Length: 110
Image 1 (cartoon, helix red, strand yellow):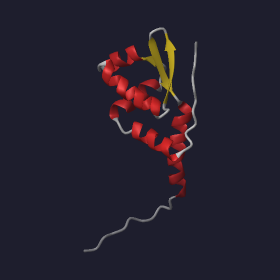
Image 2: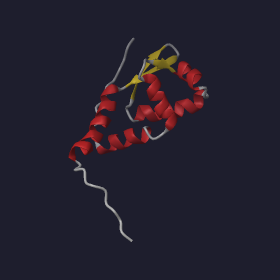
Image 3: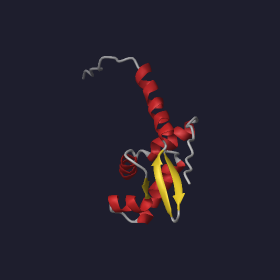
Image 4: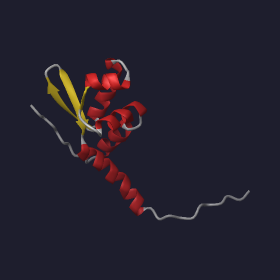
């Protein structure tokens, strides 16, 4: 049974949670792995060579930030990217790129 939930990021709190989730190198590595395909917890622990208890903390953070989708199959939970929310974070950042006027660097004189 496939069960994916795509939740739109639409509040400042959601953006904060999303960017906080991205601030950890292990979570970034998990997202990179999930960019290729859906993986179960057992596969992630093996690839990353970390205990499931440590990985569970990071996956919980990614779930709470709505950056991953989960699917239960038997005793395993499978994870995939929540692409809609990854795009929402990207769009949030891109609005700054479009709105900031590039100024020459300021030279400090002593």
